[in-house]
Image 1 (cartoon, rainbow, N blue to C red):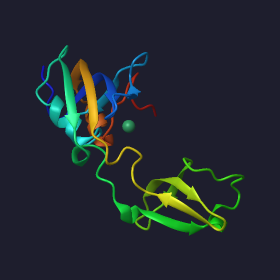
Image 2: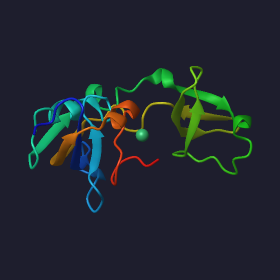
Image 3: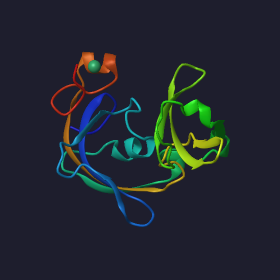
Image 4: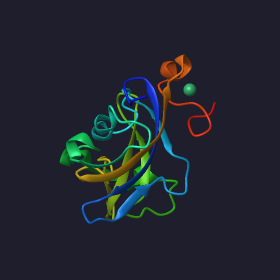
Length: 161
Ligand code: ZN
């Protein structure tokens, strides 16, 4: 069986950045399972895995455009400090889930704290970075109808209801 649309694919992975530092890894954990073709994982990785088989190992270099996006300076803005009432201390690096006008949720990171204002960055923390993945395909199976309906993997290493 090969990786193709609507297959549930399980992978072990190690992700490094430009400096060769490991920034994420499935080592010591269950493999990551996702449904191919649904955008569950970043496009560059999904594309690289297409056509692969169980046991295949690959190194994939993913530019920001196919990863977590290029940085958008328009997503950096200041808000009055009052907006954070109820938060004891605001420190650069803290992350908050902010409501967006279209009803979604965006993760924002505090980048600077001034006397009266806080500067927030709505870019994905890994945007603008080239990603270096080492991936091993550990399992491939057909997705169930329910999984396709929900758009995510069920089962031991997936989503629980
Ligand atoms: Zn579900």
